[in-house]
Amino acid sequence: MAERNDKMVDTNNSNKTGELVISGVIKKFRQSDGEEITALNGVDLNIPAGSFVSFIGPSGCGKTTLLRIIAGLEKPSSCNELTLDGEPIKKAGYDRGFVFQSATLFSWLNIYDNIAFSLKARKIYKENKELVNEYINLVGLNGFENSYPHQLSGGMQQRASIARALVGHPKVLLLDEPLGALDAFTRMNMQDEILRIWKEKNMTMIMVTHDVDEAVYLSDKVVVMSPRPAKIEKIIDIDLYRKRARNSPDFLRLRSEILEILDYAGKSEEVDYYI
Image (cartoon, rainbow, N blue to C red; front, side):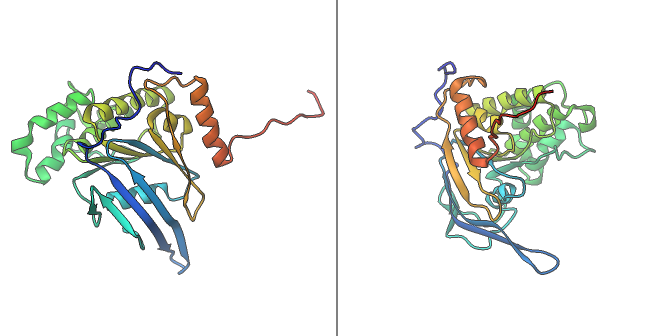
């Protein structure tokens, strides 16, 4: 068991915001040939305020579609309920930050101006400009304020994207495979950075990932989704203390459980020949 220096979940959520209720969400797409495809087939999920939840499942199963519906970037075809802190989600809003798979920074703006962009767009920069430097420091980019995106590594660009998503103080941060393009060691370092920010800002985070180890390492809950038309196969509570040891028996047990649900655990077979 990992060292018990930080309990997984603060069970007192009374002062937190960022509770999501998702009930009966169906999403259908019509292809160019007229065929209708059902991406999500009645998704029900409650996400407590302040929690870290990961969506995992086969490619094309609807994980990102569900994330985009929460963000208000897609509308469900139908649903019973889709609310954030009791308010219906009808469109995109500043109470939800979104970090994409690759850094979507403006190439013609330096890092400071990229992070300040949403504040300026909302015309609230003057009274909140101290937040820009606060979040530059939070993601460890102090000293790179005047650099341009092409001058930074992929990991540093994603740090800037996270800071830009956070500077407006959203209730929920939505992450769509933000670490997928990074090398293994940078990815693990960024996982720790995301956890540090999550704990410091005490906010709800929802991540789409294909990496089972990443899901177990980061999450309070892992939502395992079925192939399309997607439904929730199972919700796994990750009842481990942080900081988590990736090679601990409990970690490996949870990893194996998720792989079994996804039918990727594999089986060893005896062979009747030798090389």
